[in-house]
Amino acid sequence: MRSEGFAPAAAEVDGADGFAAQIVAWQQTHGRSTLPWQNTRDPYRVWLSEVMLQQTQVSTVLGYFARFLARFPDVRALAEAGEDEVFGLWSGLGYYSRARNMHRCAQDVVARFAGEFPRTAVELTTLPGIGRSTAAAIAAFCFGERVAILDGNVKRVLTRVLGFGGDLASSAQERALWDRATELLPPDGQRADIARYTQGVMDLGATVCLSRKPSCMLCPVSPMCVALRDDEPERYPVKTRKLRRTAQSLWMLEADDGQGRVWLEKRPARGIWAGLYCLPVFDSREALLDTLQAAERKTVLDAPAFLHVLTHKDLHLHPVQVNAGGRALGEQGGWFAPDDWSALGLPAPVRKLLLALSSRPAPGAA
Image (cartoon, rainbow, N blue to C red; front, side, top):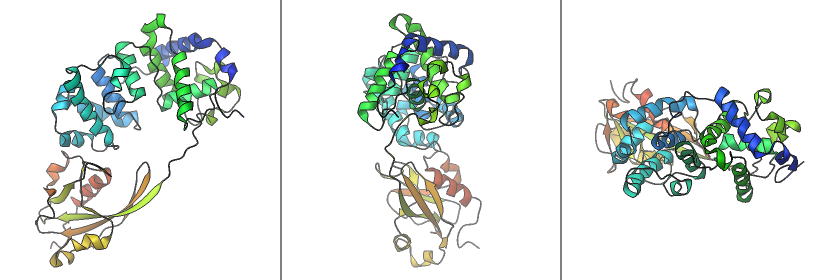
C-alpha cells in the first residue's frame, strides 16, 4: 500500500501531453456543453456559476443562476444591490457565507477594478470568496491562462490516474497535487486547449469518475490510470481528517400577530445563519418563555421538534408557537406578512416552518 505521493509508473504512461490530449478530445465529443454558464468568456457568469456550484448540485443551481442573472445581469448590478435582496434570491441554496462573499466580491470588482474582473488567477484570489481553484477556473475559461483547477471532482480524477496516495488533509500533500495538476495541463504552445481541458477534467469527475462505482470502461484516460490498474479506484482521494460533528438544541419562537404576520429578527453578522432573517432563537424553552407576557404564555403550543443538518453540526429545533398580538418583541426585528417572506434571506428550516405556519390558524385564535 502506498501511503504518500504518487506511483512512479503513472508519470511514465503517455506523459502529460497525452493525458491532456485525451481529456480535450473526450470533452469535444462526450463532455457537457449545454449548461448556461458554458460556452462563454464572460467572467461574471463563470464566477457566479463557480460560487453557486460549490457543494451544490448542478440541477439545483440552474434555477438560481437564471434568477440571479435576470435580477443582476452584470457585476455592477450585483454590487449596487442591498444585502437583504441578495440573500433573498440566494435563500434555499445554503452556505450563506458564499452569498455574503459574492456580494462583497462584486463590490470589490467595481471599486478596485472599475467593474472588470482581473485577468490572472493571482489577482483574482485577492477578491473575497475566490479561492485558488475558483480563480483558476475563471482565468482558464475566460482568459486562457495556463493554470490548474483542483475542485473535488478534479482531485478525484487526478489522484486516481496518478495513484496519488498522499493524504489531502495535509497542506503539503495538497500542494504536491497542485504541482502535478499543473504539469498535466496542455503545454504552453496549446493555450487554445486550456478552456476545453479545464471543462473536460471537471466533466470527467462529475459524470464518469464518480466517487463510488466509477464508469472506468467509459474513461478516456483509463489506460494510464494507476487506480484502475491496481483495481482500487475507490481508495482515492485519501483524506483522513474527519470533521468533528457536534449537536445543539435550539428553541424557535413562532410568534404570530393574529393577522398572519410573523415576527422575524435579523441575525448577528457572525455565527449561525449570520445576517439572515430568522425566528427568535433561544438555548432553552425556559429562556423563550421568559420573553413572553402572561397572556401570551396561555397561547403557547409546542410544535413537533425536527432535525436540521449542517456541515459540522446537527441542530435539534423545537418550534414554539404563540399569539403575540402584534406587540414588538425586540429592537432588531419586525412583523412580516407572507408576501414579504420571499424577498428575505431565510435559513432553510425557517422557510419550512413559515410555509407550514401560513397554512394553519394562529395559536389562540378562535
